[in-house]
Length: 308
Image 1 (cartoon, rainbow, N blue to C red):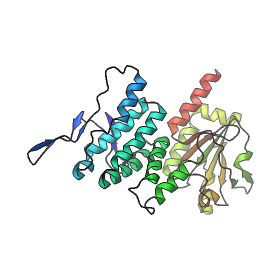
Image 2: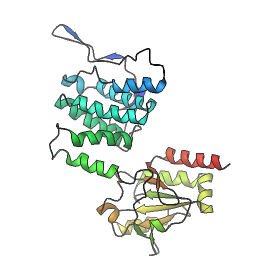
Image 3: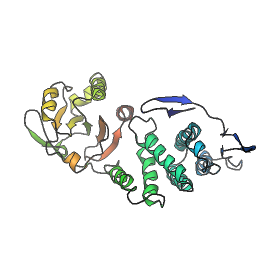
């Protein structure tokens, strides 16, 4: 059982049987998909998982438009993404690339799988969002003969953005001003950890995040001790709204406005939803990129456990 998106923001749990899509067609029984059978001689879990994801789409019927565009196909896609976590990273990325190549056999199937990749791996509200996986899909789309050069513009741009500020890379620097008119640069902050909190003053979800952090003793303690510096950055143009609401930000946070506007104009960070969280180390290298709250809390909790 895995979660499948049934609308823009609604995710629900559903099941699907190992053999799906059976239907009568001109009195011939058509099986649209059968899950791969892992050879019994394979006993290592990593090998079994790699085989499974590699051959997952081998028996998928790509040339039936109704089947390709149906919910069974969407559930199969969700199951496949869920199965990737059991395989090694290299096997995952190869399986994703191979899946997209397999769908190139039919234009409808290829378009459908491009859209499913965006929906499950890219959209902010997807619980399966995964930039590593989406990069593999985007790389294949950019190289695909199924897409025209015009159709490749958006995936190429997304791929370019996805490759920025990756974990282990030095985070892009930028300037900011505070409500008191003081100027600073992100790179100038001194702390073991820096949390970049890209937000919008009118974002209700941002306020929920702020409240959670304000009420988390361990988080507050790290801020008060200076171990963690939080830089809340407004990257857009409405200075007046930012100023009015800046006083309501959590105590101890640095509240800044990217007055130069280069976060957006130069696409220094890919902020397609707010809040967007980046955790950096003392050298301003990215630890977590566009992290969920659970990822951030989990990382900081593990860090505290190691110290104790």
